[in-house]
Image (cartoon, rainbow, N blue to C red; front, side, top):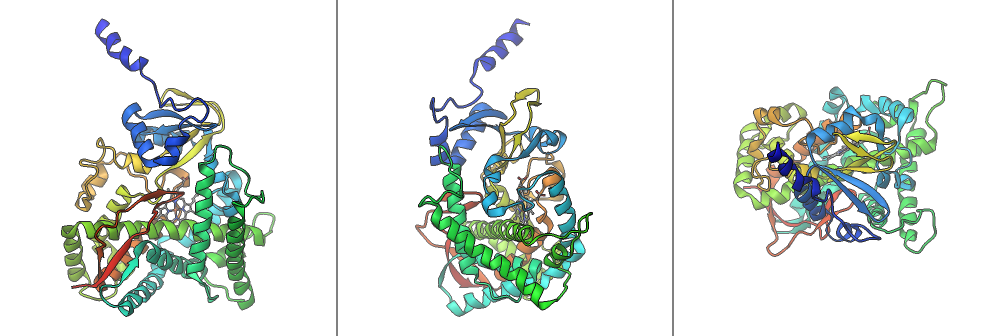
Length: 456
Ligand code: HEM
């Protein structure tokens, strides 16, 4: 008995989370090294770590079991996290930010666009766009240097626009990417502010944001107008949304359409682009994995363009994408706010507390992944996947609000990587040090410049 008490005592006396500054809490650590801060919290304090960032109270959840409590078993006690809700000026009431009945209704409405049969129909568009990038790279000549992060953003943007909105409206993907970039930077500022000002405030810092939002709105309303003018009624997401009728026989207003399209544009291109960009980065650093990939492509495709039917045979490509998302999860953290006082794993959670779920942290947990910092796509055997705890690998989130584009994103990433790797090999630029940039997604602040070489 004594032994048990003395065993518990030091633990009971230990702080449960970082102390931080009296006024600002852990704001400084959060601002300067967010990923390192999250990792240290998990390492030093365990699976349930209360943190305070300025006036916001949060709790980092580090075990797959507790993540399951928040996302599934007790999901009714939570709603989307405050920083995401702050982005309503941008994402409006789209599916990423909406709640309750409105979310349920809109998700049901959009779901058919993501069914397996529909996704099979997107394959050709995706590989067409990948071939377009391959042609641009070929024209640039062997040895040319390109920022692969940007290249993948442009490619994924073209793919999502054509698959989901089948538009003929001319789209300037560079300008759209730039506008989304401005929005991301502003989001980052606001996450890190001591007291975030509303977006509507005409402060000098908000001017670029408002201009970028105007630019995005013009693009989105352009897509809607073009579809209305054409009178065409395709099987794509845009048509589904435009024809949808609620119980009272009303349809989506232009504002509601705008919110859904902007959400899909944002959620559906940046994330997949980053999964691909980090895959290229890791392949360049791991030539043995790259050779494994190349042999698979030679055997499975022999130089021809892949189709959706080939995807099940592209095991190495799939495993590479999965492992890249483990090490560099495009959404490195997401969360839920408690809407009432509740308990998680027997510990009290006050209403208003933000539960932080970090794929970055959980994917590096040695209890789940042996040698967690090593890039080992070969670990993703079916047996290994079966042995994973349910919420031990969460690049797409989990529970009812799991990513709607998961199936689409995986097929898109595999087809793009398989198409481009057959024409090109990408080499790292010596001396270029990647600077991780966790905004809403996990980017490289200084891009990912790489040398384009012809595939052998
Ligand atoms: C590698 C690519 C992707 C990653 C890593 C990713 C990740 C995520 C994550 C983590 C969430 C959950 C956020 C939360 O629970 O708070 C989410 C939600 C969502 N994603 Fe993705 N996503 C990807 C691709 C896509 C694509 C291609 C689309 C659409 C075409 C998409 C549309 C959405 C939507 C609509 C939601 C909100 C779902 C809901 O709340 O019901 N995502 N995504």
